Image (cartoon, rainbow, N blue to C red; front, top):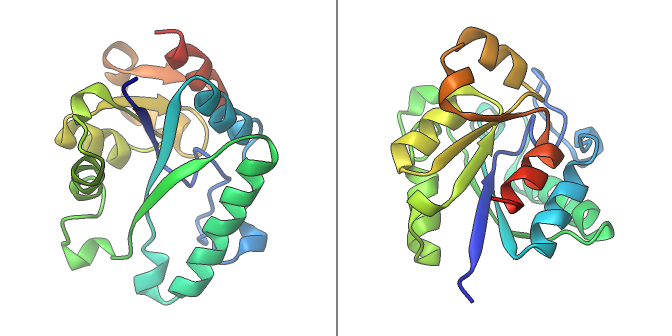
Amino acid sequence: MMKKYILLDRDGVINQDSDEFIKSPDEWLPLEKSLDAIALLNQNGYKVVVITNQSGLARGYFNKKTLNSIHAKMRDEAAKVGGEIEAIYFCPHQASDDCKCRKPKAGLLKQFASDYDVDLAEIYFIGDSLRDIQAAQAGGAMPVLVKTGNGAKTLQENPQFLTSLLIFENLYDAAKSLINR
C-alpha cells in the first residue's frame, strides 16, 4: 500500500498560537480536537508531518533544546489519544534572513518530499495563514485552510480563498473531510 501523508502547520493548526511566541512546553496548548484529528488521520492510513516556521529560535526567545521539548510534548500529547507525528520540519530563521526554508517559500516542503520520495501534488498541506497557503502552492502541494489560529483573519483578508481553497472550521473537520475524499 502506498504511504499517504498530510502536512500540517503547527501554531494555530495543532496548538494555540501566540503573538508572544510559544516559548516553553507549558505554553504549548493543543487546540480542541486537534490531537484527535491527528489520530483520525493515522487510523485512516495517513502519516502526519509538521512543517513550521520557528523564528523564535533566531530571535533568541528559546533554544533548540526547548524547541525539542515543546515538540516532545506535542508528540506525547498526540500519542495519548492514539496519534503519531511522523516528522517535524522547522525553519529556525527570521524573515530578514532570506532563507529557502521559511514559509511562504517551499524549502521545507521540498525537503520533506525529497526525504520521503513523494510527489507534493498528491499531498494536502493544512495551514492557518497566507504563508502556509503560499508555501503549499509554491511547492505544488494542495493547500487547505483552517479557520483556527490566524485562519479566519487570513480568509477575511483573502476572500478569493472562498472559491479557490478547501476551507474548514478546524483540523478535526479538515481531517474528517479529507479522509473521505
